[in-house]
Amino acid sequence: MLARVTLPLLLLASARVQAKECTVVQATDGADDSPAIIDAFTQCAVDSTITFEQKNYSVLTPVSLTGLKNVTVKLNGNLLLPKNITDVQIQVNTTTNQPSSYAVPWFYIFGEDVSIYGSDDKDWGAFHGFGQQWWDIGQRILRPQLATFNVTNGLLSGLKVIYPVAWGFNLPGKNIRVENHYVWARPTNGTRDVTTSFPFNTDGLNVSGQNITIDGYFGENGDDCVSVINGARDVEVLNGFCGFSSHGLSIGSLGRGGSVQTVANVRFNNWTMDGAVYGARFKSWTGGQGFAENVTWSNIKLVNVSTGIFITQNYYDQDKGARPNNTNETATRVTNFRYENFTGTLGTNWTDGTCISSPCWNFVQGIDGSQAVIFDLYNGTATNISLVGIDIKKHDGGNPNVLCDPATLADGEQNTLGFQCTNGAFAKTDIKPDDGTGAAMRRGAATLAIGAVVLAALSTLV
Ligand SMILES: *[C@@H]1O[C@H](CO)[C@@H](O)[C@H](O)[C@H]1NC(C)=O
Ligand SMILES: *[C@@H]1O[C@H](CO)[C@@H](O)[C@H](O)[C@H]1NC(C)=O
Ligand SMILES: *[C@@H]1O[C@H](CO)[C@@H](O)[C@H](O)[C@H]1NC(C)=O
Ligand SMILES: *[C@@H]1O[C@H](CO)[C@@H](O)[C@H](O)[C@H]1NC(C)=O
Ligand SMILES: *[C@@H]1O[C@H](CO)[C@@H](O)[C@H](O)[C@H]1NC(C)=O
Ligand SMILES: *[C@@H]1O[C@H](CO)[C@@H](O)[C@H](O)[C@H]1NC(C)=O
Ligand SMILES: *[C@@H]1O[C@H](CO)[C@@H](O)[C@H](O)[C@H]1NC(C)=O
Ligand SMILES: *[C@@H]1O[C@H](CO)[C@@H](O)[C@H](O)[C@H]1NC(C)=O
Ligand SMILES: *[C@@H]1O[C@H](CO)[C@@H](O)[C@H](O)[C@H]1NC(C)=O
Ligand SMILES: *[C@@H]1O[C@H](CO)[C@@H](O)[C@H](O)[C@H]1NC(C)=O
Ligand SMILES: *[C@@H]1O[C@H](CO)[C@@H](O)[C@H](O)[C@H]1NC(C)=O
Ligand SMILES: *[C@@H]1O[C@H](CO)[C@@H](O)[C@H](O)[C@H]1NC(C)=O
Image 1 (spheres, rainbow, N blue to C red):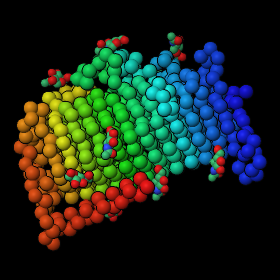
Image 2 (tube, rainbow, N blue to C red):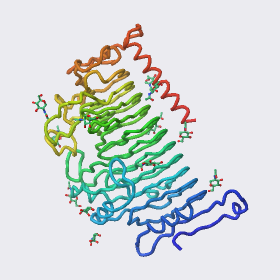
Image 3 (tube, helix red, strand yellow):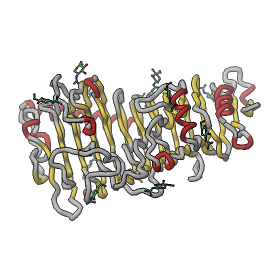
Image 4 (tube, rainbow, N blue to C red):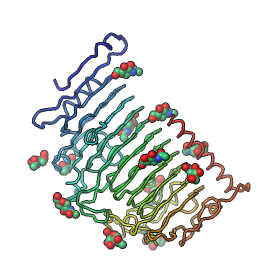
C-alpha cells in the first residue's frame, strides 16, 4: 500500500461526507516517492486531508494531481526534485503535464477547494529544486516550472521554494490566497552583477488567474518576484520583500507577436525592493494589443534599485537584431496606473547578471543608472498615469533623473502625470484639479478605479 488511508470514526458516522485521511508513505532507499504521492491524492481526492510526514520525499517524476475537491494538504516534509539535470530535462520533454506560459510544471495541481499548508518550521514545508547546479553551468534548456496551482478556491500557506531550477508557482486559478510565501534563489557563489551562476528566470509567482491575493512574501531571486500576466483580474500583492537581483513587481510581458492580452485591477502595496533591477515594472511588446487597466503600486521602499518606476510599451528582443518597426501601429494600452509613496535610493548600476547581449535586454536609449522613472511609451496609448508621493534619491543622495518623451504623451496627459515628462531631472508637477476638460474626466475615472481596487482589497481582507 502506497498511501496510508484512515477513516476517522467520528466522520464515518456521517452519511453525507466520508472524510478520509491519507498519509504519504515515504519509499525506502531514496526510491521515487511520486507513485505514493499520486496514490494518496487519488485515494483522498475528495473531502480529505493528506499529510506528508516530516521527511524528505524524492519526487523523481513529474506529478499531476487532478480531480481534487475539498482537500487539505499538510506539507510537514519537503519535496525534492531529482538532482540529475539530464534526467529532469528528459522528463520535462516527455511529461504530459499541461505547460504554463513559461514551461512545463513538475507539479500540476487541479481542483476546487484545495489548501496546502507548509510547516511552521523553517526547514520543512519546502520544495527543493537543486537549481544551483543548473545556474552554475548556465543550463537553460528544458527547465521545469516548479508548480502550477490551477485551483478554484485555493490556499497556499507558508510554502518555501529553495533553489528552484527556474520559475516557481504558476497561479492560473480563481479565488486563491497565497500567504507567507518564501523563495530562496540566491546563488551560493555568484553576485547580482555576474552572469556566472546567475539564477535566470527564477520568478517567484506568475499570476494569470482571477481574485488572487498574495499576502506576505520574502524572496531573493533573479527575475520578477511577482509577475502578473495575461488574463489576470482582481489581484492584490501585499506585504513583501524582494532581494538579490529581483526584476521587480511586474505586469507583463503582454502583447507578444501582436497578440491581444489583458490585465485588470491589480494592487501592489507595501513592498521593499532591495538590489532589484526594477521596483514597479510594466512591459509590453512592440505591436502588442489589448490593455492593462487599473493598476497601483503603493508604499514601495527602494534600496539600491536600478530603476524605481518603469514602463515600456516597446519591448523587443534586443539580442535578435534591430528594433522592429511597429508596422501595425498598435500597442498594449496602459490606463489608470498609479504610483503612490515610493521612497529610498537607486543603485549605482542598471545592469545585472542577465545582461548577456549587447545592448542588454533592458537597455533604453539614455539610461545611465540615474533614472528613478523611465517611461518608454507608444504614442498616445498610455492614459491617466499618476505619480504621487515620490521621494526617490540617487545613490549619492542627489535628485534623480527621468526618461520620458513628451511627444509620446496622450493629449492632456501631462496634467495627471505628477512629474515633468522630459529627459532630465525629476521634477514634481501639480496634478491639475478638476476643470471639466478631458484630462480631468480621465482623472475622475482613475480616482474611481483606485477606490474600487481599495474596496476590493478591503473586502478580500475581511
Ligand atoms: C470537506 O472535507 C472535510 C473533511 O476533510 C469535511 O469535514 C467537510 O464537511 C467537507 N466540506 C464540505 C463542504 O463537504
Ligand atoms: C542521469 O540521468 C541520465 C538520464 O536518465 C542517465 O543516463 C545518467 O546515467 C544519470 N546520471 C547519473 C550520474 O546518475
Ligand atoms: C526532446 O524531445 C524531442 C522530440 O520529442 C527530441 O528530438 C529531443 O532530442 C528531446 N531532447 C532531450 C534533451 O531529451
Ligand atoms: C487551468 O484549468 C482550466 C480549466 O478550469 C484550463 O482551461 C486552463 O487551461 C488551465 N490552465 C493551466 C495553465 O493549466
Ligand atoms: C476571492 O477569493 C477569496 C479567497 O482568497 C474568497 O474568500 C472570496 O470570496 C473571493 N471573492 C469573490 C468575489 O469570489
Ligand atoms: C560556483 O560553483 C560551481 C561549482 O560548484 C562552479 O562550477 C561555478 O563556476 C562557480 N561559480 C562562480 C561564480 O564561482
Ligand atoms: C555594472 O555591471 C556591469 C556588468 O556586470 C559591470 O561590467 C560594471 O563594472 C558595473 N558597473 C558598476 C559601476 O558597478
Ligand atoms: C509590510 O510588509 C512587511 C513584510 O515585508 C511586514 O512585515 C509589515 O508588517 C507590513 N506592514 C504593514 C503596515 O502591513
Ligand atoms: C500585426 O497584427 C497581426 C494581426 O493581429 C499579427 O498577426 C502580426 O503578427 C502583427 N505584426 C507584428 C509585427 O506585430
Ligand atoms: C524600419 O523602417 C526603416 C525605414 O522605413 C527601415 O530603414 C528599417 O530597415 C526598418 N527596420 C526593420 C527592422 O525592418
Ligand atoms: C501615502 O502616504 C500618505 C502620507 O503618509 C498617506 O496619507 C497615504 O494614505 C498613503 N497612500 C497609500 C495608498 O497608502
Ligand atoms: C477599471 O476600474 C473602473 C472603475 O472601477 C471599472 O469601471 C473598470 O471596469 C475597470 N476596468 C476593467 C478592465 O476591469
